[in-house]
Length: 124
Image 1 (cartoon, one colour):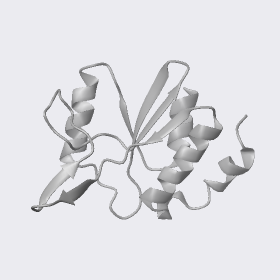
Image 2 (cartoon, one colour; image 1 turned 180 degrees about the vertical axis):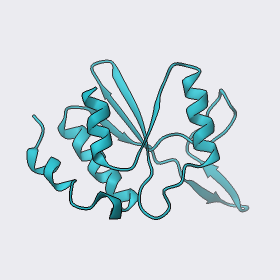
Image 3 (cartoon, helix red, strand yellow; image 1 turned 120 degrees about the horizontal axis):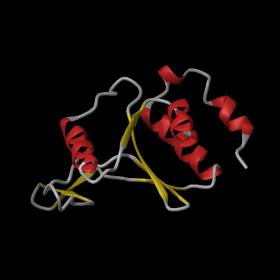
Image 4 (spheres, helix red, strand yellow; image 1 turned 120 degrees about the vertical axis):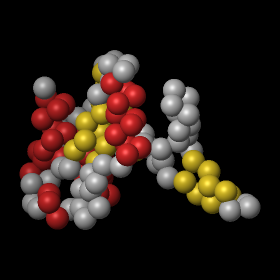
């Protein structure tokens, strides 16, 4: 059962929320709605020798950038959400390229800026 209190809270000021706050809302909503909700931490970190290391590699395009922020799984259905909110909410070239690659496999990447959009996508 979905926590109704949580759904009301997200309507406060979605345009002023940071991307990390929207991510927290989305992940909480999805988990509360019975999804396996996964935050994909795709950032890079510096190794010795000043070389960056990323935590994943996309074999199909040979890149390690652009994978969406959130993966939601339930009953053999899945959703990929790229969250763009707050001041820096711009879709990068790598994110566009990953979405194009995913579409070749009939997979949609949903670019969202608030929880309302996720709820609408899930309910459709």
